[in-house]
Amino acid sequence: MNITPCLSHVSLGTNNFDAAAQFYDQVLGALGCRRVLEHPGAIGYGRDYPEFWLQLPIDGKPAGIANGVHVGFFATSKQQVDEFYQQAGRRWGARRRCTGLTATLRCRLLRLFRPAIWMATR
Image 1: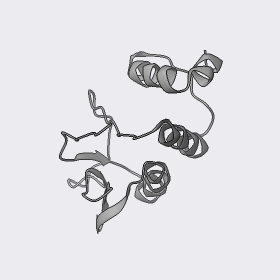
Image 2 (image 1 turned 45 degrees about the horizontal axis):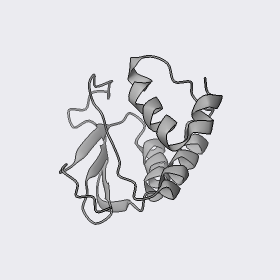
Image 3 (image 1 turned 90 degrees about the vertical axis):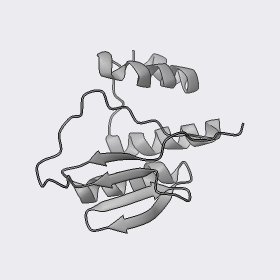
């Protein structure tokens, strides 16, 4: 399948830059992404172009929850989905239950790619 992305970039703020950078280094590495561009307090990740940015908020205020934000990453194979899930599970901690509105889409994708794990979390 040939996937042509339609997003230029997505940026997420963080209050713990170093820990967040370590997390995204690992999980995005599972999708073949790397640090493409770095500035003080900001990292642009991608395969060739910085499509996903992690940064400290530029206004100096704490990062907060952005209602309605959704971030999706392309994977080119089930193997990449599995590796991403494994890396995220190691870094994120115990398996989370799929509850509440914010988990609905994540659970649908998990159900498609990892049905045995989805059933185990119910």
